[in-house]
Image 1 (cartoon, rainbow, N blue to C red):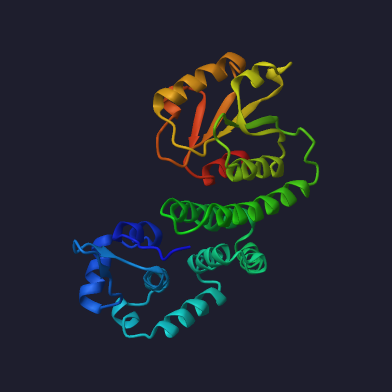
Image 2: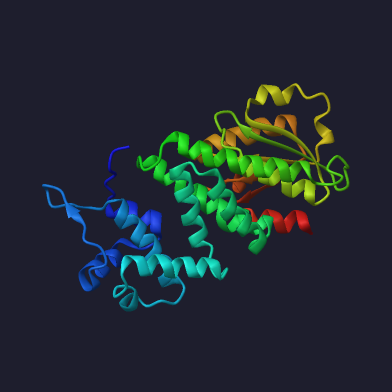
Length: 293
């Protein structure tokens, strides 16, 4: 891959540090020295991104920027490693997983993931580490920082972990609380969130009929006994406009007139207003609370 040039907005999205803060740190502390285009526009390289990721981790954990700026690059890396080893942060774990994705290192990824599972447990690992990781990888793919192969590599490792966890749930076929029908609309195919919902529902005593990604409405209309499903879980992996989701829910209601519908939407648009019996989730913590009660 060719050397990547990051804009200051790219750095803001990937590190969580506001662009004006990055500029202030540059001017006051000289923590990074951006290059400039012929038209005098700042751009940054991989080393700048890596350094800012580590600085962000230290700063969020009580290290003053004036102190960090006096540290050598090697000292910053060691300090971040020390935080990770002491189980104080998850940002360092996300950063390590990104490195594993870039290097296609399955063993390195497994070591970090297993450490998170021990420290945080399965559900918090996904909410606090995996989903933020996938969001960052998606941004990096959009700006050409990683290839589609690197993104698929990590996604498939995460899918494997979820499938093993789902397979290991005792009594997964017993319908204790009702039956979920889980699917993604046509054109939506990134199913990590849907698999996680599958795991959560089974763990909490629900039976799950899992249809997976990109399911046409016509397939749902062919179901023999749609009323046997007590609830639907719909996961979105692409932004959908309010008119589009309204039309989709209307079609769903033709097949499932009374069922509660849960919509996992990480894109910030409130779709729940289009259906009185639909519940929107911008993250999975609320869904966990609902099905755990």
